[in-house]
Length: 225
Ligand SMILES: C[S@@+](CC[C@H](N)C(=O)[O-])C[C@H]1O[C@@H](n2cnc3c(N)ncnc32)[C@H](O)[C@@H]1O
Image (cartoon, rainbow, N blue to C red):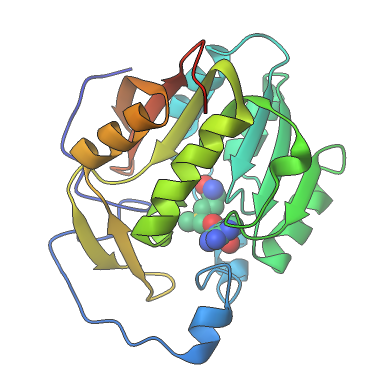
């Protein structure tokens, strides 16, 4: 993977990280575990780029042992992230809080295991994985939930398991162009520290064609996560 670069974008290269807006939350917003994605699910299914991020995810998947099991958090409809991993023979388990997107995932990949539930409360199929991937998810979550999720991902990984996720390098907030919801990046330095606290080593970073920044972390062999 390439070295660190400044990523200006959050999701699909369409978020202006320099704009900090005020965000009005309604009670229906706070009830929606998908952080606004169920309401725009059809747009994601139809409009998600089939190519952005594929090279990064493919390279990461190919660095795992053959036949590895991978948990895709915020899997959406599974295209292109889960699809790319399955095409290389990996066993993918998907979690997403949007019912419409999990229905699309199940329709496309009937052989895969999927759960419609928030990552905050998911038990991650009560098993461990060789890899966990979260593309376009982390920055949708509150700072506290992001911190807790990094620790829970460590616990869901086997020793030397890998965690690939996206979030801008800058510490920033912005309005997601598709959902209008607030997104927030804790920033590269904080992510690195949180990963280390959870027993990970940051082993690589990458930036895809859409300007999305990837963190590739490896769980320690002997981490007590
Ligand atoms: C930007 S989309 C990315 C989807 C997919 N990973 C991709 O690359 O196309 C974010 C996804 O995260 C899901 N999501 C948002 N908040 C979630 C949560 N708390 N728990 C589980 N899924 C969530 C949404 O439903 C949506 O499918």
